Length: 355
Image 1 (cartoon, rainbow, N blue to C red):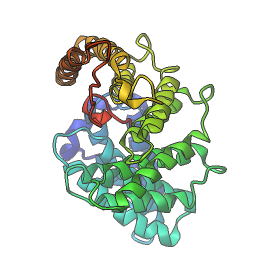
Image 2: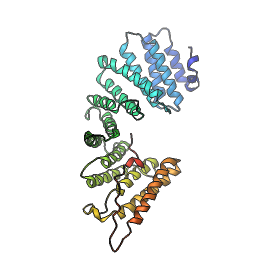
Image 3: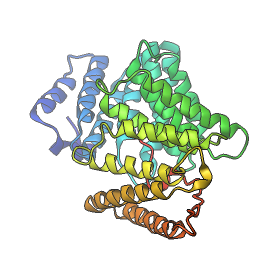
Image 4: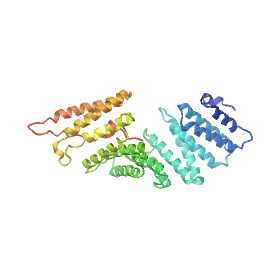
């Protein structure tokens, strides 16, 4: 074998993989068989990569498979391209070079799969393509509407009844994509409502007992969506958001998932910050909720600093300082509580949706 251009691979492959590579170079095997063997080896490398180098090695193996795949084996080539795309999108990087290569790989694969592939493999490619576009849209190198379209095409096959796991992933990705579009027109309200609906659709499939991690993720994100939504029912939405965060916190604990726990209590704190103590009397103030919010932020800051997330810890500290100022302004005056007028702060200032 000639691997000089892929020397990074040499030190990363175990004996079993090296033996498989030798078999893949067997002159007695047909080119299509060798291409399939190389694809399988690459898939094995990227399932549980120990370092980014292994993902790069997988990409190199996919390229080798594509180079020897016969031209008339179009569907096999498309499958290799789709798998290459998943490896590329998993590579951590500061720029977007790998993501842009992944976009190209998926575009080529999808064209062929639309014509020759099985519905489920086409839907999987569309789902991954949508995620690549969504990430690129975050740095203005793709349109978020194209990501939404890809997710919606995937949902034609990945239905709730037939593919529940994929359905949940798509609903979560759709919702976060809807929420990432700036509110510039009346359609923004519709997109927010669609985001809430998507999270709720996902929660119809998974349960706390059977899917605790996914359940907590969707509940956390539903809570955030309910905080964002532009509505005349702000208080009711915030109460529903608190319920969603409490559901997430049945799974996320400081002991087992400290950073996810910190994320959710930050989001809950933001919600309390914007909620009057007595929902039926909004003008009565929110001193009690401000105190709870301060305590949640304080706990979250401890966790974030302990885990080295200094930037988010600083943001949370600023939120605590602002709450302190509002608490001073809400001290009782002549027997009456001064209302603190919280703004409609977005929960991703100190917390975040989960993808």
